[in-house]
Image 1 (cartoon, rainbow, N blue to C red):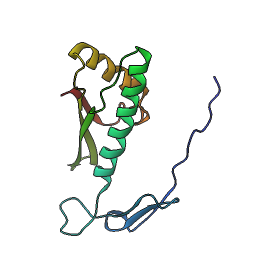
Image 2: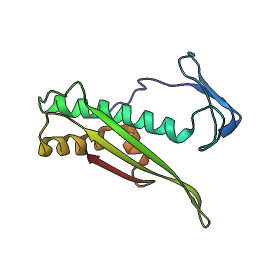
Image 3: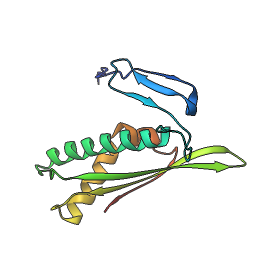
Image 4: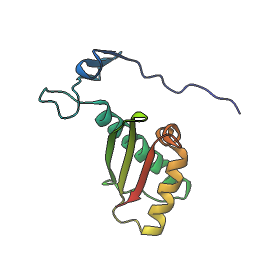
Length: 137
């Protein structure tokens, strides 16, 4: 099977959690601040939640096409990404994605989520690396 790069996202980050990140095309230009900081800015956990949920919703759309199921226009995902501190292992992440598929029956919705979890690159990246719970809300 031939592999080809579909897209390469390029970003430049300075200052770590107290810095800034900007994409090469300028579409992403954010200030960064540690979680709970009084400073203005987002953090890597919020960006991971946004990226993963957007990608996962796209994967649900692909899964829906495979079975001729129309995806509702108001389908959505609420993502929660935990930054966990462990004295023995340092830091790790955990994630929860709550998928809303209005008008789709539970069995079909759960099947779409299971298939999307196989298709989504973020799910593949996280599989076996962080605790992830993906549920139909």
